[in-house]
Length: 162
Image (cartoon, rainbow, N blue to C red; front, side):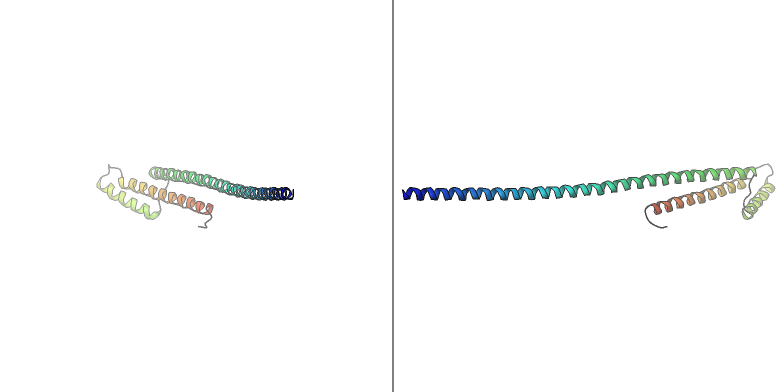
């Protein structure tokens, strides 16, 4: 009987240790699960933060692109206006409604007089050439001014100071 009692006691102790081991393993598994959940939550938080930052960057890039497109459109408009003004100036010079600076005018009159002496029936082609040249020069200067303004505006938009 003592022997049976001893065997029963050993079996009972074995079951107790086995149960305790299962409980410890369950506690370790639960601890690992909590740690895994915490890690997943941290990863989710980091991903959401990065998405927020990327959304901000994309919004800024879109706004910058829109502003750059507006600057480009304004530059094209100013360039077209400069060409129109150049053409208008040439027409006014030919019609006699505008005059060039005296230095240019003197060269035109000298050319006109020499040509008139050579042939009174032919129009002064050199004067027309000078008018067109003056119009091209003024138009090119206006276009350059428009380009400089556009580039300076773009540099200010990008954060630089021209």
